[in-house]
Image 1 (tube, rainbow, N blue to C red):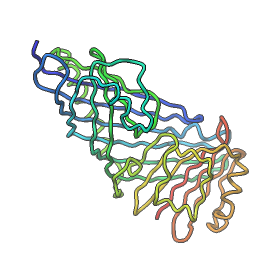
Image 2 (cartoon, one colour):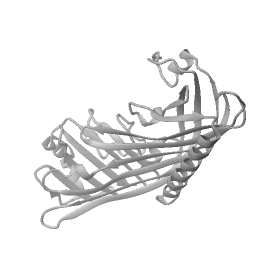
Image 3 (spheres, helix red, strand yellow):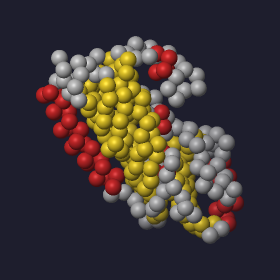
Length: 316
C-alpha cells in the first residue's frame, strides 16, 4: 500500500564515567512522501542534547551544584534510506570495520551541520561559607554524522561524535494515525529543545567541531586553543567534557587515576603564579585567579571511584 512514511526517534542514553553521570538525548523526525516501504529520501529535523550533573563531585565537605548542558540542532536534514549493506554499514566512520551482530532491512547515513549552544555552571561552597564557581557559555556549529539502521519498524541511530556505547532507538511507520501521533510528539520535543538551544550563551564560537559547543563523552581530544603551555594536563587524563569558545574562553573536564595529592602537586607552580587562595576540604580544592593575563578557574575533586576529577576554565 502506498503511504507517507515517518521516522521518529526520542530516546536517551545515560552513562556513568568513573562516577560522573552524563545524559544524552536525541529527538529526530524525518518524513518521505509515498512508497510501499521505508526506502527513499527523507527530510526532517533533529536535536541532540547533552548534560552532565556535577552534583556528585562534592565529596564529604564541599557542596557542588550545577553541571554542563549543551544542545545541537538542525531543521534541514536530508538522507536516503537504502537496502542494508553489511560492508558499508560496518565501515561507517570506522578504521576497523566490525560486522554487526544483527542483519537489518535498511540503513541510512546522515551528515548534517548543526548549531546550538552549551553552558557550564558549577558552584562550590564550603562549610565556613566559602564559595566559588565556574560560569561559561557559548554558541556555534558542528558537523555531526549519524548511522541509522532499520529492522522491520524498529530504528536504531548511532552518533559517533558522542563517543558512547549504545544506540538511540525509535520507529518508522507508514500508518497515518501512528505517523500523526509521532509527528506531534516530535514537534513538541523539537520546539522545546530548540528554544533551549537558542536561549543559550552569547559568546561566539569558531565552530567546525562538536567541542566548540561543549561536548561530553570519553577520551575527547584536547582543544588546540587550550593553553597547555601554561596549564599542564597529565598524560593519563580522560577528557570527558570540552568547552571551546575561542577566542573568548576554553575549558575542559577530565578524570585521572592520580591521587588528589599528586594532582594538587602538579598544579602547585601554577597556583603559586596565580596567587590564588584555595577553597579546600579533605577531598577537594578550588582555585580562582589570573595567570599571564588570563582568568583561570581550577576545581579538583577526589573521585568516589578512583583518582580525581578536574575542571579547568580559562578566559583567553
